[in-house]
Amino acid sequence: MEWLDKATAAYCKLLELLLVLLLAAMVLMVFGNVVLRYGFNSGITFSEELSRWAFVWMTFLGAIVALKDNGHLGTDMLVGRLGPKGKKVCLGVAETLMLYAVWLLLSGSWAQTRISWEVEAPVTGWSMAWLPIAGIVFAISAAVFHALKLVKLATGKLREDELVTVQESEDLAHIQHEAERKGDTK
Image 1 (cartoon, rainbow, N blue to C red):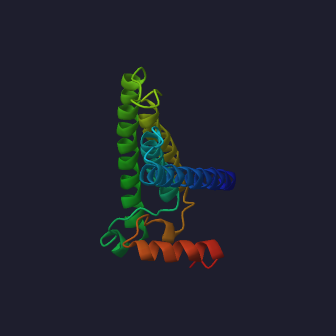
Image 2 (cartoon, rainbow, N blue to C red):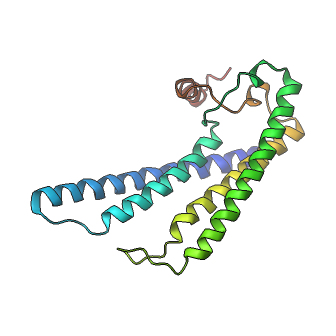
């Protein structure tokens, strides 16, 4: 299982690099277009369309990284008060429901990809299928992460602090993430 953890960590590092590149491209396109419009009364015709696509991809790829790091917000008011057995049951139910939700997202994204494959974007002329493909990438990645969590749960390889996978606040999530990066885990 340790090699899987390393593989998922490497995958998320690659996604983080891609997120940085997408954000940089988006900022350059939007800023460049603003300067060209106000300074030179011209513009880059495709920058608005591509920056929107970059934003969609950043949203889905960022959600994958947040999922791996348990960075999504939620309420642990009930689950946090349960004992280890109750936390395990709730985690099993939650992960199973998330697998179902991911399946719905995957099937919907796949259907939308098939529908929009021949549809051209208004400015670039590229296939509009590139937008729902981001949902497919997210759904497959999320399904793998949720399935791995279920396997770890079933084999007893989760520590008690890993049984609650949501954060009450972004500040707490950031503090815990920084502590884990520095090796100061509880």
